[in-house]
Figure: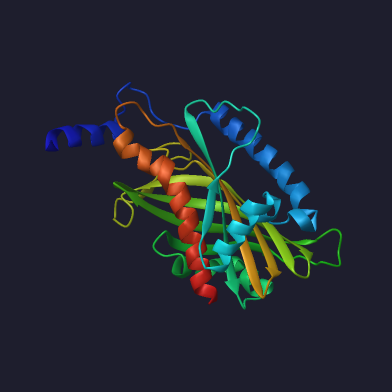
Length: 276
């Protein structure tokens, strides 16, 4: 059993078919196309108060159930899919949405926490190991030219599910105040590089798109709404990862199928804990 397990684990490093799981241009292009469909839908939703939250778009009975669960303190998550069929060769797109409700919290406090990137390593530990604001251009709600807060940030992620992976990432974040009681944001990864031998003298980065392929892209779309005596926080995430290779599903599948949802739930739980 030990020999078989070791052979399968080594298969991650030297794939069975002799190829690498490196990111292909076609996969990256498919992710951008998918994200474009999602962002066009989001643009329409945030423009209308009645569709600002995902829960408000649900049929009445389902909406009542979701809202009851949120007010009981649950993290409500669901896998999403777009109606368009987009082929993603050699890769998978993971599309999830999650929502929490935090009583007695103001919307500006919730937004300020998410924008405090220098503290994300402590707020979201152990998933975030390092965090830093690289650039910040404050917005001005009175200026059409600069309506939004813009950030460029560095985050080092640590993920463990059977095996572990460390990723150095950079992101561009945009926060828009739609009204005094609501804010929405788009946070898009611009660079994702796997770190080999993290935390040792041999630590080094692989080129973006190389490595195990557990995460090649990450976009998150946040919405903050103050209502019902508290603030609703919603996060919609898109993750691009490698496909699951034949024969190695027991090792790779937990990473590429379970980590995106679990990371979303963890992030929302930690956000609530930091605001209470």
